[in-house]
Image (cartoon, rainbow, N blue to C red; front, side, top):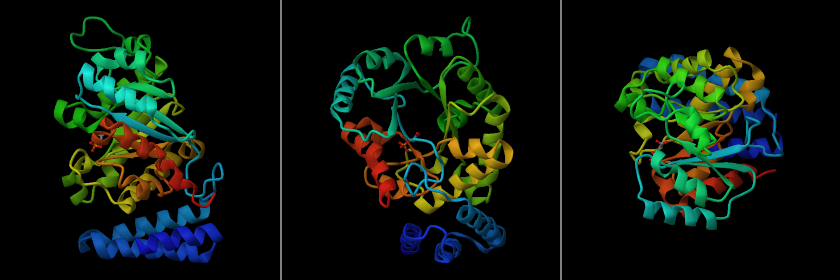
Length: 323
Ligand code: PGA
């Protein structure tokens, strides 16, 4: 942590300074000492040095905000999952309507399908509404499914796709998720595209490979990234109270941005929001938000409490420390 704040301070006074580069490398070494077995250290070290050097040379402030590597607007989504009743949702909506949000944040909530209409008709327009899933294509004889057209019809602007609970509990695969994303975009919905590794995959040193594979499936299916937000959600951090450290999250976010740069374009890499999800709450959001490649959050449990969700949205302020 000490290395992290040194890095931030040196950037504030002189963004391109040698000191900044050294503190980044020190950060990479710090990570080596603390989190890795010797088996993967060499490969890990070079990956880190490479991404830190790349960051040092390509950094630029966006919108006067020095801690953002991407140029997209901060984005915070609340994924209510399979929670709520008419009554509890009415209370949550009322708390959200009363909350004060910083202006430069896109705020989205994702209620269960059956409450979308209730939420749309009672929630302030300041907050957009997302579904948590949708069918792969046009509606019809698909019992129990909801189509993209129907989501548009009830006023949804977004849909979450590829969430780990759908990948690992329901069994959706990359190709299926990719098709859903392509179709949802064709219907004018924005897509919150989730990626992320299982604990076993992290422990096997496969975090980047898994994230790149998820990214490729989306890339193969989407005609444009304009309305896509990527949510990096390590599965071991979802609903477990075990949040990724800011450094762990940042290193995956920068790798995903790099992947976009190499495989799509530098422009898409810069514009596409990469948000973090997995046990984000009112206490840990500030340190996470300070990471340069974290462009917002996808929040589960803590999004069911209006005031706490509002403080997560407002963690955007920590990006402006030196603006
Ligand atoms: P959590 O869920 O914040 O409860 O960990 C995050 C998510 O699944 O999007």
